[in-house]
Length: 390
Image (cartoon, rainbow, N blue to C red; front, top):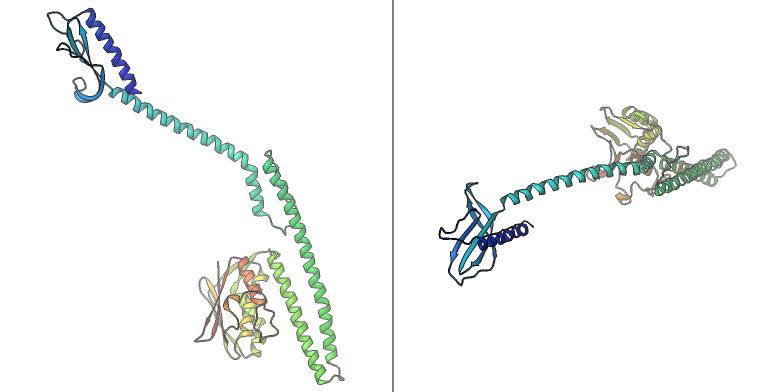
């Protein structure tokens, strides 16, 4: 556009020069070049040149430097004389104007973009405010809290529909959870009561003098089966409660004192197998979790070490800054190691085992952000359970 405008300017000046030459042809004094942007010189007769534009550079005495110019060359006949006309126009000023104009346009565009971005951000936040409130309520929602959740209404149809859908869904989930909890509690109670009655009746029946030795053995097997069924019922109930997050009360738990209580509780069981404990967990640790689940966690690990440990061996309980290790001696696992924490995976040689003890341990550590790892050392025949604290 700059070139186009300069070419139009030079063409207009050429016409003016030609008109001036026609009105005032050069006399005996010669040609007067009254403009430093214009040069007129006589040429031979018969030489004719159409107007030609070109870009070049010339020395500007005013700026005292070489500047780019746009040049127009042409010839004009006045009577029997021909004259060469050369017009040039510097366009440095035009480039400077274009440069500053470009900067101004870019700055205006950036300012406009910033204003639009700011306005759109305000509009976006206002529009999505109900959505963020819904997300916040969902983050604090617990299916076991009992109280109904009312999500905020919105003037935007999509968000209002989302709120209504979430309200209906959470109410339905709370209702289903309540029914499941009641079913679990009632089922456990209904199972436990007849099992207790059966166990009591078998104890009384076993005291009878009219039983043969074979009958006594059958009664003894029945009692063991009932005890295993009762233990299985309690373990499944515990797993269900853990899965449903029914142990929500948190408190600081002193792990060292807790382990001491667990060892005292299982002292007679360990003595029956002539096993002893060796503790090196003097470093204090405190966990923020449900006290009952913390006791179940460590009692299951200690009971597992006693049950599967070699008689007359030592159970080591060690700790460092970030973990606890419970070590017992025993034969290798009779199943793949990756199945150790799965439900109903147990040693076939131990009929009284339910296969749920370590599954309960896994559920508890997952719920509280802990980590449980297992390794076996063939040279020492040691089973090592490592509980990593958060």
